[in-house]
Image (cartoon, rainbow, N blue to C red):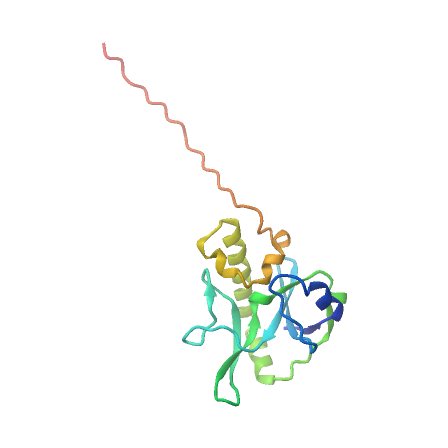
Length: 180
């Protein structure tokens, strides 16, 4: 999997989008993921949301992140690191939107992510599809995506199009026998 840093121009251009991570001057590393001919920058983060078993939380059956490893801070508190699907950004021009390649220095995290690339792609696809489906069909769990940056990309994802199903019922003509 390819890791990059976002360019300063891209960070500036996207800073006012809903739910975008705040760049605190140090930039952040992102994994490049392509799905449906769209390129996304999925940030590597610490303190990912997990359930009581340490598994990524889910919305509509789709995981909101991929946990690469668990670390312990100086206070003995555990935190989960990995890819945060909720904060994915759509990349329109790789040349200008990505800065330089980011050499992920943590070998354990890098190995786990690279070893699970297929699973990550599958989970990210599930997350995006679940988001789109929830918005097209106005499913009850739609509100749970309130933290997702995908809300900025409805046109690109076709999430604004309502899925319409047309059911055609055959007309039945009931012929009542003549009572003579």
